[in-house]
Image (cartoon, rainbow, N blue to C red; front, side, top):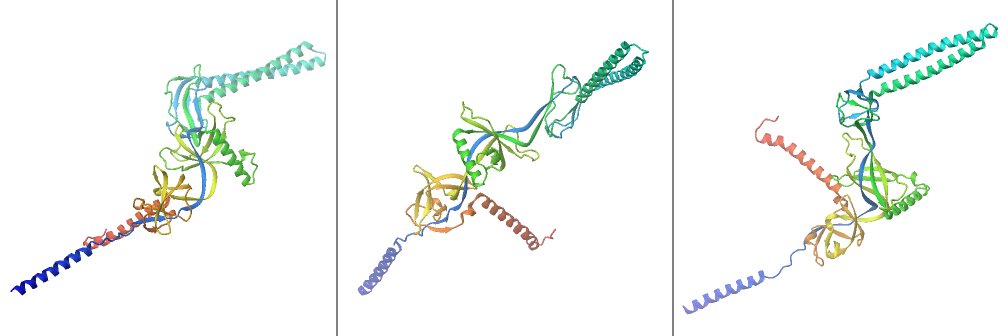
Length: 424
C-alpha cells in the first residue's frame, strides 16, 4: 500500500514537471516578421519650371449697341443671351420720318438736275449767239453762273440723300460683330436717341478670351532671360522676343491643374513704378457652347520659365512633414528604413518633384509609411512609380469598373437561368 502510494506520487510529479517544462518552452520570445511596405524608385523625367500668377478674364471684344438716330423703338429681333452674327438685325427704330427725309432729298436732286439741264442749254445758246455777234456777253456769263449754281445744288442734294440714307439705315440696329448679345436695356415703345446715344444692349465676343495678370520685376527678368535662352536654342534672334511664342496655362477656381492652354500676346510698355509690376495679357480659345471661360472670372495662370533634365519625382503620398522638415522613408540594401530629408518642388500629375536629397536608385516607401520606422527592417514590395500618377490611377480605376460591369452583365443571364426565370 505504501509502495503503491509512492509510485502514484512519482507519476504525478513527473506529469507536473513535464507540464512546467512545456510551459517554459511556449513562453520563448519569437521575433515578429518585418512589416510589409510598398516601395518604388523615383520617376526620372525632364521638368519644366513654372511661374504662377492670379489673373482676371476679360472679353476680347465688347461693344455697347446704341441708338444713333432719335425715334420710338418699334421692334426687337433677338433673344437676350443668345449668339448673334455680325449684321444680324437687333432693333428697329421707326423709319417713316427718315424715309420722308430721303424722298425730299431725292426731289431736291431731281430739281437741281433739271435746273442744271436748263442752264446748260441756255448757256450753250447764249455762247453761240455771242460768237455770231447776235447776243450779249452778259447772257453768256449769266447762264454760266446759273449752270454752276445748279451743279452745286446737285452736289448738296446728293449729300442730303447720302445723309438721309445713312439715317434711314440707322433705324435698323444691327450686331457690330459676331458674339453673344445681352438683355435689352430699353423696352419697345420708348423714345430713344433724343439728344444722346441711348444704349440698347451689349454684344460680347467670348472667343478668343483674354486674361490679364501682373509680373513683378524679379520674375520679369527671369522670364526674359529664359526666353532669350530658348530663342538661342531654337536658332532665333534672342533680341526679337515678339517673334517667340510663349505658352500659357490657365485653370479656374473649380478645376484641377491648368487644363486650358493659350499663349502670351501683349505686355504694357513699361513697369508700373508704384507697384513694381508689368501687366501682361494672354489669349485663349473659348469656342465651347456655352463658353467655359467668362469675363470677370478669377483665373490661375502658369507661365513656363525653364526646363531641367532628369529630375526625380515621387508620389505625394510618400511625403512626410514634421518639426525637422519634409522627409521621405527610404529602404536601403539591407531592407532597413532610413529617414531622408528632402527639398520638394512642384506637383505634376500627383507626383512631387524632389529638388534635393534623393537619388534615382533609392527605394522610396509609397505605401505603409506608418509601419516604416527608421532603423527597422521591412519586407518591401516594388511597384512602378509611373503607375502612381493621378492619370494612371484614374485609368486603372476606369478599366476596373468597366471589367466589373462586363462581369456583372455576363453573370446576370446565368443567375436568371439558375433561378429558372426566362431571359428577356
